[in-house]
Image (cartoon, rainbow, N blue to C red):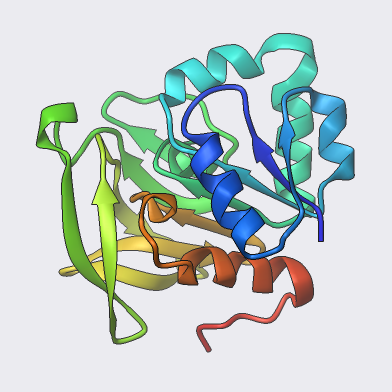
Amino acid sequence: MRIGVLAIQGDYDAHWRVLEKLEANPFYVRKPEELNQAEGLVIPGGESSTFLKLLQRDGFFDQLKNFVRAKPAFGTCAGAILLANEVVGPEQSSLGVLDVRVRRNAYGRQVESSIKQGTMKDSCLEMVFIRAPKIERVGRDVEVLALDGDDPVLVRERNVMAATFHPELTDDTRVHEAFLSLVGSGHNLFT
């Protein structure tokens, strides 16, 4: 399995290490043509408006949009913002492939970052929030996979997963395993 990790900005190294640990054969995607080698793609956290600026070069945004419509993608934090079809706080462009509304930086500034215990399929899951977005609305076909209290923080719609937290910064690999299952078979681990 070849999993691309978008490596133009953000915390892509941490995702690469988790995927390597899970023997997923990760590689960095820094150019649009490298998307052709990927069976699935991780879009890491970082700064979503900076991502958008960098993606405007060389037709990268359009190729990425085509990729995430056709193949499995998993976005964390800024990656979740990029995948959402509605972004507020402030509004900005996105890939628009996940029927959710996200509010940028809803959990506060960098100094208000936190580690919380949420739930995923009725078990505890450590969640690292860093200037995290909040999912304010989920569409009818969006499956909520994990919660922080009553707030959805990990969601999936068809071949797209998004987390508002950073699962790559903990020792728990279940979220990445769920994505790899989606890539490998289309089977959803959560049902």
